[in-house]
Image (cartoon, rainbow, N blue to C red; front, side, top):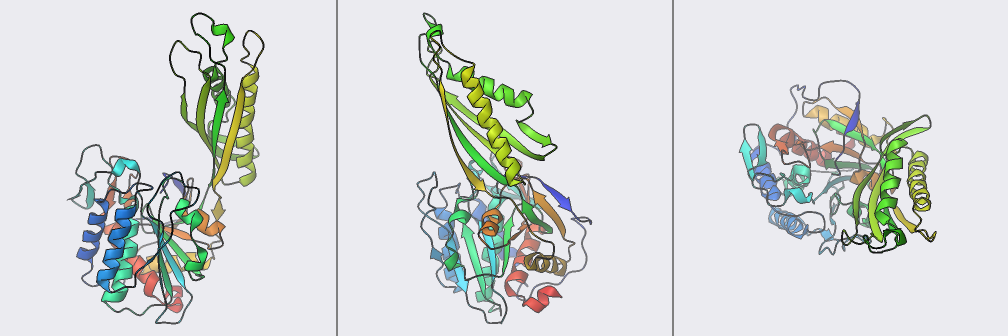
Length: 418
């Protein structure tokens, strides 16, 4: 889950509980679900290195008597030389009803490599100092795996259902972007399990655009003839400073729109006695409004082009700047009467929780699935403080997420609507 915070819609206390119903077949499954997520969080598997996680999922499904899931090729256009792609388990229904899709990503951020999950009170944390837990998103992976295996070990009746475990979400939702839709079976309902509480339904998210900015200057001796050089560092610095001064870096609020931008990486130069002839920067622009997001991108490009004109050398020569950008994920916001939202609300209520709605300021696999014609609502799986060394998995939240996943995988449409 790309780190994000969402604005909640609706009222109600997320922790409010009432007497809920235990899904059919769940009895005695708490222990197995906790063992599953604990083992998954101990497996190293950042973006591009999910093979051991995928192998764990395959073996667990095989032990349960499930068919072997289909494995896609690694995502096209990914920056990683990955050895695995998405896993898809598509099952025919034993009950009539619309096909539903349950999704979770298998990768974690690099901070979580080496985690040793330990139970402390009501939470699971990493027992290794300075290491994240990896509950984002092994908790989602485990919730899906728990639901899928129960269908077979408990012989649970179910409508047509597809389970999708994606790769490389943390690095840009590459798995969801490249998933083969033909393998999914045309789902009518779709649910993505990612970060947060299980009763927080994320119904929309911002869109993100990433840019690589290549600034070319001219090298010269910084002591003997600095005036002969064109400093790529100076060009980059002027551009970033202008963006900051003009309010186009960080949180952006204008009459015609709002969003964020960030220059997050700057690399270049070879030595202190050489005028830097090249700097490469990586930046991003985000907004829920696609048009305003492009306005942010144009402002970034203008700042760098103007900065080039401000740094001539003694002969009047100027540097150059090139931009290479792409859409990471498009914004979306589902209607409150979307069937997937209604079904998720019903499942949350059936386990004794009060659903709330949120819109995220970061990306989800749901962005690409929705963009590709599969409207998808996201639910949390108990993850807290994600992408930090203080990450935790709330045990009660996680177990409720598993129960919700079972409910969504097994309940007929009439039950979900009740």
